[in-house]
Amino acid sequence: MTPATDQKITQRYTAASLEKKGANKVSLQEELGWPAEAKRAVICLPAGMSEKIGGKLLEEVLPGLLSLDVQLLVVGKGSADFGTLFTALSKEHPHRIAILPNDDVTMRKMYAASDIVLFCTDPTDMPELEEALSYGVIPVSPATKALENYNPIQESGNAFLYKGKTVWDCFGALVRAIETHKFPFDWRTIQKHCMESVKK
Image 1 (cartoon, rainbow, N blue to C red):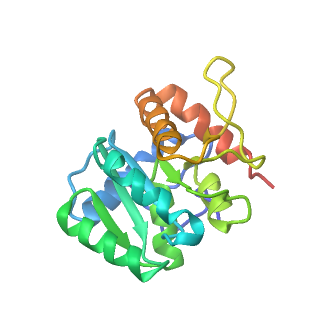
Image 2: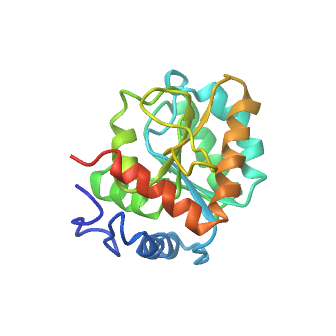
Image 3: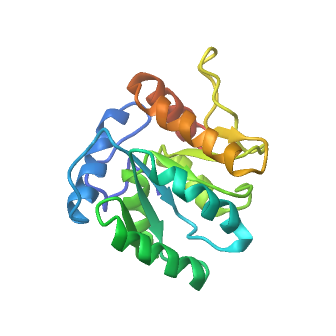
């Protein structure tokens, strides 16, 4: 499935019409009862969270993440401990954090609405990586050969990668991504690279 053919998202789009992607964000925000804010960065966690896929790092980075002007979409799968954590956070931040059902249609609507996909371990073998890339969702991820770090001078790359394993490494990459998101031309260039990287 691609966003060009997906009948379940609000607005279909391609790498050549990424300006249309924002309609999907507004649609999901309204569905969740959130203010419609097309310019606000939306981060998704499509694999849910558990210790195996970087739960400890995520737990450490969450306070910093929530200090930023972002919204967070979390798929309801993973370990019970993190389910409890995100349930509490979604009640504390009802217009910023939402737990979404783990079903195919909701996942596609989430990708269509999201700007950034956050990985706390190498996502190379995770199906969620290719799914996110195909919908133009830009990864923030540990360094991996499966992705290329964004280079603003060369306008190359399809991700914001971090080489270290500390909370500051991850948070630094998130900040770089969110700051770049403020520049639509640059952002769409990276999104295009994401989508083109998975073309069959």
